[in-house]
Image (cartoon, rainbow, N blue to C red; front, side, top):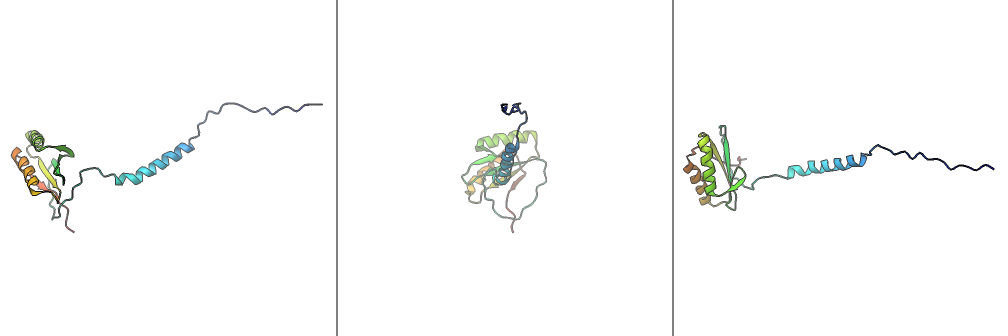
Length: 136
């Protein structure tokens, strides 16, 4: 009687990497980022007043933002009025034709805006503009 042999299996190592699940995960993450990215708006939350806007034509414009909580920001970085004066003086020493755009919140106390304006004028910068929302 002849015995049957057990089947011999080919036990060679497979050197291929299955990337299908990796691609699925990456596509899911990509879709999530595409949906979430527009919702992530960075910056300072300021409600601008409405007025008829005019365009400023200068090479360099520095943006000063004054939030509702009376915090002052120069180009997105929080500063005190003294630091604002120092930084503006440094920029004005290099470029005398620099312009300043002030974004002040609608609900802000008027005196705080005047303090910022005095600081800018005290440095010697005369080209000032106030940011507003266009009227509808």
